[in-house]
Image (tube, rainbow, N blue to C red; front, side, top):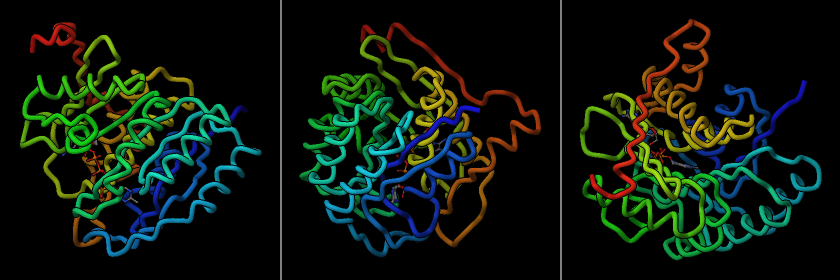
Length: 288
Ligand SMILES: Nc1ncnc2c1ncn2[C@@H]1O[C@H](COP(=O)(O)OP(=O)(O)OP(=O)(O)O)[C@@H](O)[C@H]1O
Ligand SMILES: Cc1ncc(COP(=O)(O)O)c(N)n1
């Protein structure tokens, strides 16, 4: 039996809902062997982030070297990287080990408002990491910070995606979780030519801690198993929709998503897809 391996390079969330913990749970549920490089330890629960403790450059370098010397990942995702120094170390390792199928979740600010990336590190993200990415998955505030464009409507979201794509990544997926109250949670994909929307019904729940981490880890799981970017994004959108739809009601704040829900649904023979995909070539001409 061949086993596909995925690596997460991210921060630890002591509460278990986001970061490394969400990523490893997602890898496990989607049938890939999970590995981790920890960039920072956070003291965190469903009420917020109480402390951030970045790892030393040497600790990050050595974890990457240990993986590089022995365990070639079939895909990897990055999450909280915290500093420009750590971003540059990660980018150098990706290049030197020729790691492929890279998902960059440009984590900047936790839902509770705590900063998970130093402001001056945005430049390093743009110039060192984005050129290596197959898929980059900013939420709306992160897309604004990366592109310098204020997103107010679908035209400005397309513009932001185009601007981010110019840094050299293959696919930009601007996630819609942070949009104002809409019927659908719609993520916009740009592959350099075409815009495609991935939508699922917006769920009304405070239990969305770690949605972005889980989504990016599901994309990496799909890529590790040989899916195309489009197929992996569809899988990830279904995985996160199921995980939000059946909250665990853990903690007294913004609770984690349910990493068991997608496979439970598959085992129970649930409809294969909650996701509506609209491939609209009119977008490519910027007509909407
Ligand atoms: N209330 C919701 N209902 C349905 N889907 C949602 C909801 N909130 C987020 N999503 C989906 O979850 C995925 C992650 O999106 P989101 O914009 O929340 O990421 P994020 O802000 O980076 O997450 P995080 O807060 O963990 O960093 C996207 O596919 C998005 O459409
Ligand atoms: C270690 C770590 N990584 C990422 C997030 C973002 O998740 P959220 O925005 O849901 O708080 C987080 N809170 N903690």
